[in-house]
Length: 413
Image (tube, helix red, strand yellow):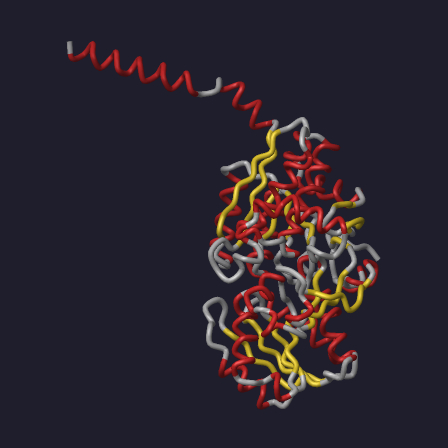
């Protein structure tokens, strides 16, 4: 009786499992017709607001807008904690075990550069929206990578050059001590010197984990530089600006140059503190009819109903263009050869509601206009998130580093 009971239970369990599972051949066919996108970013730390869950929402918006593609799209996400080893492990697991075809977003340049190498090794596709290092399309360029939204050269060209022209000809840098901060300081210092300015010094701040910037700000103030360049981002930038205001540094005539500032940073600071800050971005939700239309569509899915940052908008636009390329070349070909998929993306002109019309160069640099903004005074803002006014527009062909100057091995002279 006991033996019969065990056999009956085993048979019933097998029948139940079989009823809920796809036949093996059908499961394989479904996987073969599915493109899997992995959104890899900071879900819990300094860069959560400017990237994080909002980037995933923007990727899903792109999938939704394309509708019937003739293939399935699955979107997953993970938190790299701003650590290269964590990001590398996730990327390898995704590509080796989980069948991810595209990795997208990836703030924190040290993580971004590490992931680029892994994706190239595995011959998959990579769209970086939030890592800033211009080395992604320079010395460490890859046929498997597109650098979509901004980079340190673009930011330095926009904000750095404008500040020197406005009389800020002596600089001191407060720099996050990792690949992004080093690259941003390097590129900005080059523009300052080229414009006739001088760099009086710099200090490197531990990343991540620094919250008290008082001693670094005192060093910057002691240098008597006219401009303190903040070669950092996210929570670090917010804390620097808040603490500089507490010390009255800007009241003494010193200018703060936020070299990478997002609208979420301005929101956290408030207009009373952030007013007058000059910054460079490639996307602003209230820039034109197309950016406003995109924001209206995606905002209900965004954390706290916030409009997308430029990093999140880059995830939307990059995913949209990638899926268009997959549709043209076919799922099987795209899954088999990431470099070929990126090559197809480069061959196609880009067009989306975030950045308008654009192109992708041979080095993987996405090209579009860039804007110099000034943060409004509180009395100038008409509604929530109405924070920027345009000071100048840099055309697409002038906004990014010239192709021949990056040192990318994909560029043939």
